[in-house]
Amino acid sequence: MMLTLLSFAVSSPARADGPGSGHRRPGAQQSNRSAPKAAKVDLQLLVVHATDSHERVDPKLKALTRYLSHLRFTGYELLETHRVHIGAHGEDSFTIAGDRKVYIEVLSKDERRVRLRVQIKGKGGKLLDTTLSVNRNGTFIVAGPRYKGGILVLPLTARY
Image (cartoon, rainbow, N blue to C red; front, side, top):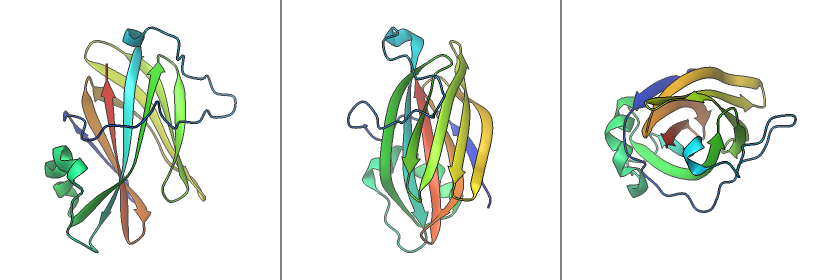
């Protein structure tokens, strides 16, 4: 399975509904939801199905269209939006399409960027385990897990 990582400074293409649907990993430190907002990073994870089975692009993905076109698929559909506020050394997780789980941990942040550890796990075990830097108010795109005749694309936006 091929995973591609792309980093872009783009605006967030969709609003999340509610405070997030994250789940804590057993034994993991929960994000400190009572910490001052300035100390937290607002993370938004989109789950996009990229496919060649149609040529429609979800209007909610308009801000990402020029970046998604580098993936050479013809259709893009927004499946899910997850949003959470995580403080330094906090982590959260999300179950996403294809019965996969995404774990995100904030390792550090400064005025310019945030360092994150991102893991994706599926039925067969770990698909991705990487540390990455996302520019402040930027988006990092992870693409590659196969899903229904295409792939899942996971734009991760960090705002603070």
